[in-house]
Image 1: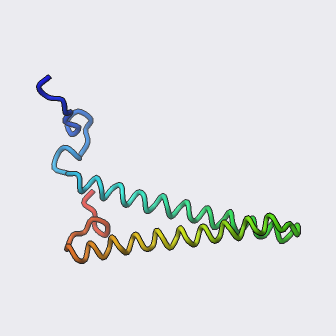
Image 2: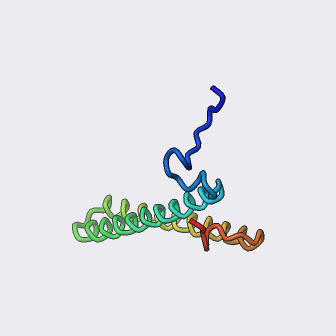
Image 3: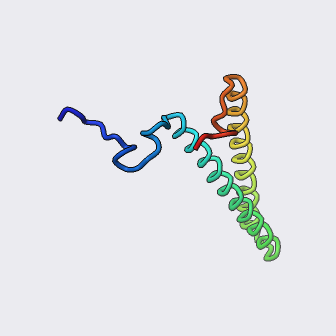
Length: 105
């Protein structure tokens, strides 16, 4: 019971225990989350467009309203993701680090 922590670098073959630290892991998580959020927003725009087109074709006001709400949600999500990316870029510029633009992983 001396060691309660596991050395993930040697046990699982992970680079995060051998020269790569928590900052590199955060970089990986941030880059992945931006990519996943962008894909979700893209699908939301596609869904909203299809909903608007099908609602206009069938003269169904509920489908049109649903499409409008989806487009509004997608635009708000895009603004949030875009703003978060630029806040992180400003932090990079102020601190002089490159954890988004040039990750080491």
